Image (tube, rainbow, N blue to C red):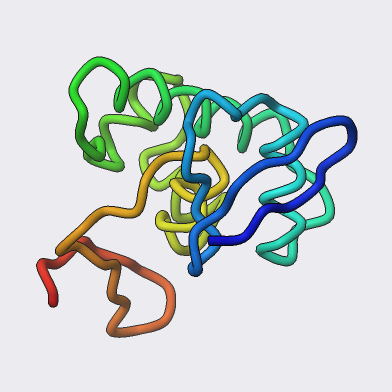
Length: 118
């Protein structure tokens, strides 16, 4: 585990960079996490995806179907892939826990799907 100082607060990340306490998350922390993933900023569309993922996770304790995300926020069908390429990055920026036994794979480097692993 790693404690990282971000602005006025310290956030704890696991060894893979996932936020360990979801309650530490806010939009400033999202920007911090995005920076760790090589993104200097987040667009309004990306933040909308991230907020929906957080809301869905809080309600169902699960990762949402990607097309369901896009449909519910009135974005194009492939919005998560278009905005983040790898949906796992959006999940991590949303401050949600690592999905045990699940990972995202991409046979073509463009389209990702969830698959059981490990």
